[in-house]
Length: 448
Image 1 (cartoon, helix red, strand yellow):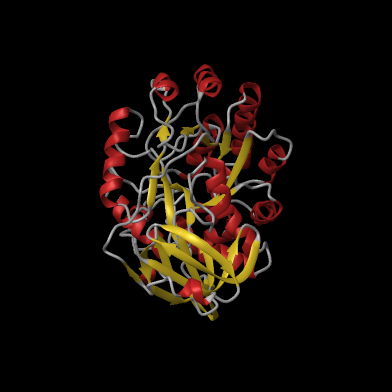
Image 2: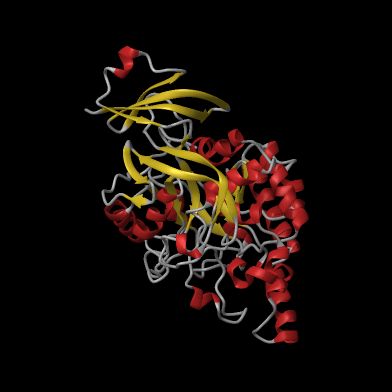
C-alpha cells in the first residue's frame, strides 16, 4: 500500500495551527506530526508532496447541497456538482431530498444512493424528506447509519414538499430516530405577504421586495415553533440557513438538542446586493439586512452557529431571468464556499480555526460522520491544500464548473486558492483539474 508524505504544511486542525506533516497510507491518515519530517518516517514513504507553507485543512463537509438529480438534471447532476465541490475543497456532501421524484420512500432513496455511488466525486449521503404520508417509514423503515437525517420543509420550496400540519409535526418530532433538519419559514405569513405584493405589482415584483415577502417575521415564527416542538419532545433539531438576528436570539436560550446552520450566501451578502445581483441572489430564506448578516458573522465567531454550509442550488440563468413570481430561488455556491469563508476570516470576522470548526469538525460531530472531519490518524484522508494569494483574484462566471455556468459571488476578490483536494487519499483535484477517477464513498453515521 502506497505511503504518501505531505510535508512543509501549515496544518489547521482541532483549533490548532502549526507547521507539520501528514502521512497518508492508502485511503487513510497514518501519521500526523509537527515540525520537520523525521528521516525514518520519510524513508517509509514512496511519494511526497511539498506543501510549500500552504494551509492543509480537513476536507470540507457541506451538509446542505441540492445536486438536482433526479428530475432536474438540466440544472446539475450528482456528477457535475460534486466535481465543482472538489474544486472548492469540499470532500463530502449531504444531498437534499426535494428532487423529482422526491427522496421520500425506500425506492427513491435507494435509487439516489446507487446513482451517487456510480457518479459522485465526493463522499456522499442523502437526506430523506418528510411528508404527511411517510412518517411511519421515517420512524421505522430508514437505515440511519447511511442517512444523515430527516429534512422538513416548514415553508415550501423547490420540489413541492411542505409539512406544516401540527399533529403530523408533533408525531414526527416525538418519534424521529435521527436529527431533524428544518427549512424554517411560516407558509401562512409568506402567502399573505406575496398576495399583498402581487396585488401591487403583478407577477414582476421588484427583487428588493423578496426579503419583505419571505420576511423576518416568517422565519422567526417558524423557528420559534420548531424550537418549541424540539423542547417539548426532545427531538434533535438542526435549524437550517438561519438568516435573522431575531432567530439567533431565540436560539441563544435553547437546549443542547437544538443547533443551527448559517449559509455562506447569507454571510457574504445582504439586501444592498439586490440592486447589483438581482435574481442571482433570490434564495429561500431571503438574503436580509446588513444588520442580520453581521449578526450571523458574530454568531459564527461566538459558536452560536454550529455549522456553515452552502444550500448549493443551481438554476440556469435563463430560469433566473424570469419575472419574480416564476423565477426560482437558489444559488450555486459549493465551488467557492471555502475561499469565501477564508476571505471573511481575512477581513477579521472570525479566525481560520473557526472556519475549519464550522465547515469540517462540527459537521462530522453533529451528524456522527464516521472517521472524517479531522486530520487524525485512522481517519479517511479527506484533505484540502489552500495557498495564499496575496494579490487576490476575482471570482467570475468563467470559473464555474457546474453546468449552470454562474455564481452569485461573481466580482468578489478573494485571497486564497484551493490547490489540491484529496478524497479518501486520492487526488481528486489539483491546479485547476478535476480527476476523472472517482474516489467518493458512501458516508457512514454513528448515533447522532
